[in-house]
Image (cartoon, rainbow over all chains, first blue to last red):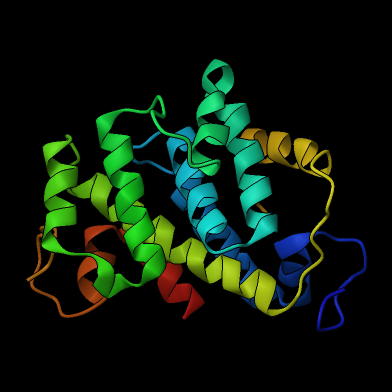
Length: 177
Length: 31
């Protein structure tokens, strides 16, 4: 149960967007631009970064919903999502994506955890400035979203099936209030 | 020194906001 009076039964961050539409509007817009707007990274890759950062922050709602969206967007390659979240070795992702996920992990720890060597590793794997920028902003933004959801105790469905439709809707329609 | 080339010399968050105006605008709106 949420720590403040939000509409009952509305899951996760959507209940908070409804509670405060003034902030909900721009936050939704930010998610839409970050995950669906123009970027050298595919939407599937960006959803994967969002799910990974949420996983590391222990935010079950954001992890499960963005992992579900990533599975839909990866299609036949959806196994990478679960490989990553189970921290299995030999994940079938590109060198660039692995380096960007490492970078996202550093941002999740704190901005000052990012060192020149992390950027160099990403560049050596083929990342350009825009890849690096978008990865850092997604990781930073999702660390904020994760804290917003869990800091207010937003309703987090426990059953995995609840996230299937959510992920499908997010993958097809994006993020609009 | 910044980790990427923002193509401007603006301080702090303004550098990345101008580098990527689509996200910069919505971050400004949020602030």
